[in-house]
Length: 147
Image (tube, rainbow, N blue to C red; front, side, top):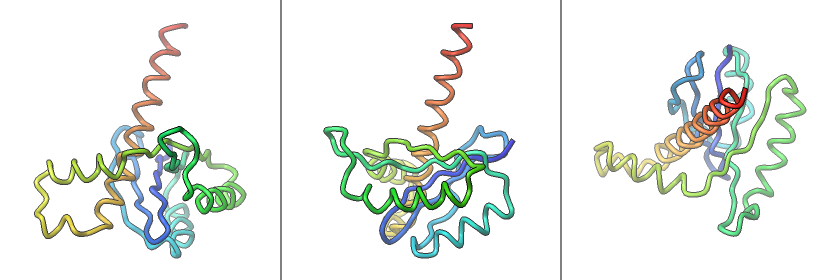
């Protein structure tokens, strides 16, 4: 079983989170400058088995894709072509930055350390990954319950 990798893709930085090999626990991994993201992923995918890449889907409140979707979509399409063996899924990322900021504060992170925007990106990727894991578990539970 491979890991699940999550990306909170941004124009400047991308937060990366990953599960353990059993796909149970989501952990922040790294914040990567987006222009280095392809190289980072190639290195990571060369070392680790990844079954799924989860990408935060930016949506507006009316459920339509936000403006940032226009620069994330080509990246995802390129990633799909380069790695057809890896399932790539979208996860609604609305409110993840707010949830991440709240988690950082509630986690007792010092005010000076909270200024690190990369920390928010990593935690946001972790929130996206956790959301994916929970929705997958709910779906599997419902599917098993109907069998």
